[in-house]
Image 1 (cartoon, protein in one colour):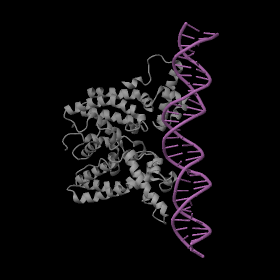
Image 2 (tube, chains in turn yellow, orange, red, brown; image 1 turned 90 degrees about the vertical axis):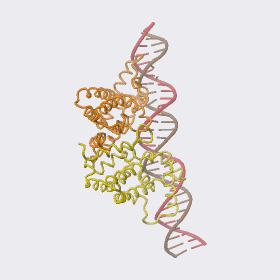
Image 3 (tube, each protein chain N blue to C red; image 1 turned 180 degrees about the horizontal axis):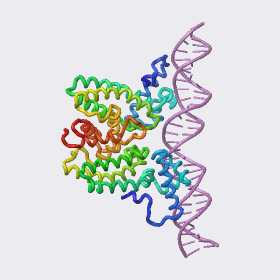
Length: 195
Length: 195
DNA sequence: TCAACATACGGAACGTCGTTCCGTTTAGCA
DNA sequence: TGCTAAACGGAACGACGTTCCGTATGTTGA
């Protein structure tokens, strides 16, 4: 997992570096809420009380910072998958519940969904992190639901996550559009018995 | 229709202005294909052999230029709607065929789908143009299909177009994801008889 | 406790881009 | 042919991402 190296635990960091990394994570989290994940680097640096170079030193790309900020939530999402599969009645229901948590995660983070499917190289590592951590989990849920005959194989795990991610784009700025409703329709389309 | 005012036909333009506008539309179309709709303004100006100010004089926002370039295709898409409804067996089939043409349009224009659901104010007019011209058409198709009992009312015309547009984002850069397949699932989810 | 060295820092500097400004050119017309 | 309004082009400005480099500081071994 390359993203684990983003803020290296190896060697030993100087105490000031440790402090600055913590301050940066706090500042970035706050700025992401206020101004979205595309917030200017200088704003994060200012809020953290450090110079811009300090950001680049610890987080070479913007995606590294974004990943670090949301690492815990991505991780818990990844662990929700097997848990839901064990505790929920049907695999399809577990998949639906998991997707619902994924949506929750995305729609509450200003611009994160857009960043996820952005072609901007600055966000490549973000995409990669989501893919490597969450696609396998989605794959398990999908396989279980398919084995139970509850859904078709019209979409693979990657395509499904990407579809859901895309449907979450721009949900914050338009009340005529509800990502959750769109995803519900998408999932309904995966049920067998249609075409 | 506000976009008709973008390149005003009223008054009379000087001949050089007329020429430059034509050159800009050509240059922009070419650059959009090569570099996407987010191509730097200077690149378009250079290719057209004009100064940057000339772009801003005729197309105050980037969206105005994008709309002008694709105006004919948007228009013909709008006219396809009623035509398909008249010539296709079922309203649902007409809707599917129309959506398919919409997808064709979006996936062949580098970055257009992303620009459409972008929150960047530079693309506001683009969004507005699509909404004002295409949502009503989609609404007709949707209403007909609904009246025939072929689809549910889970998504309104705006939400459907937005969903399809979102699903088309990033399709050019990733062969693990196929927008057409995702939209097919979405449409399948609109069929009655599910939840 | 103190040097000396690697680590880390901060802000200036550079290149790119969107946008505006302004002195100059030119088309249209009498 | 000369006048005027329309239009032009490129310089200039500000915001931003990114890199550079001289300076400061924590760590470590004596």
